[in-house]
Length: 295
Image 1 (cartoon, rainbow, N blue to C red):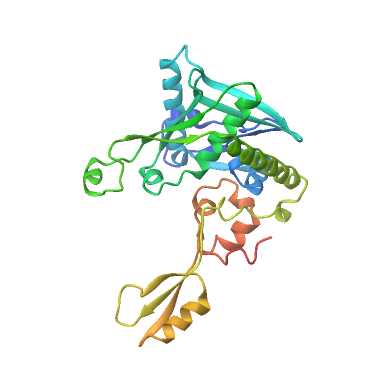
Image 2: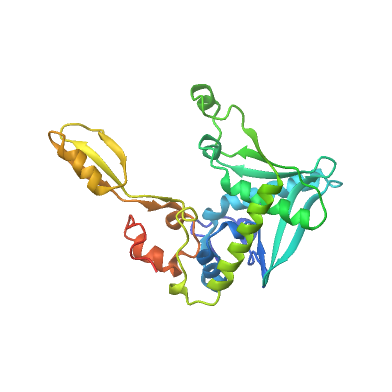
């Protein structure tokens, strides 16, 4: 990956951003398994041609530095340990931030946005924690719980006093129990994702199935029912155009306004999008057709 420095920032920052491939040949990390197979394969296949600017990697630098600091403060703790298990033709790996052996608890530190807490969008973390738990269980260790420690990079005390749903402190935790049922569920997920990635590796770029809506952070196209002379929509939650048109027909001065869906990850957070057919056909010109042209 080539690191650019469009703002002419100090070389120290550029050096801090220099990175190698996340996975060694034949390995897949826990965090990689959370991505779409297409994104995983395209990133690996076109690594040398990918570019990112220093300004885009600021949070990554901050997160790495934060983890290094915590590791220094806990020299005798069970930290940054890597575990691996052979799954089909891949070695699945995971590295835990901190493991409390006495109580069987995995701790993972996240430097994140407050909106993660506001929207309670934790499913990706739950899967990540369960993958760690699965790997550790396979290596003979007990795991009863996964605890994610959130340190908010954009927390506002003023907002915390005004908004009941806003975090009341700049640090917060969220935890998940590790049950036998959850481990069975995550093992099936791991095996499915490994199979998807292995299959994608045998295909040409444009033949690989697009990432799923969940993996693309997709929001669907909305058909808002509007009324002439009114600024806000009568109904802005309809995803069926015919239903929206039928509702608009019952309103004096009613009409339908199409609000194109977006795949937020594709449009702002995917490093391999320039090599992705789905992105070129559905995102570059703004909005989506919900994958109808994708292949």
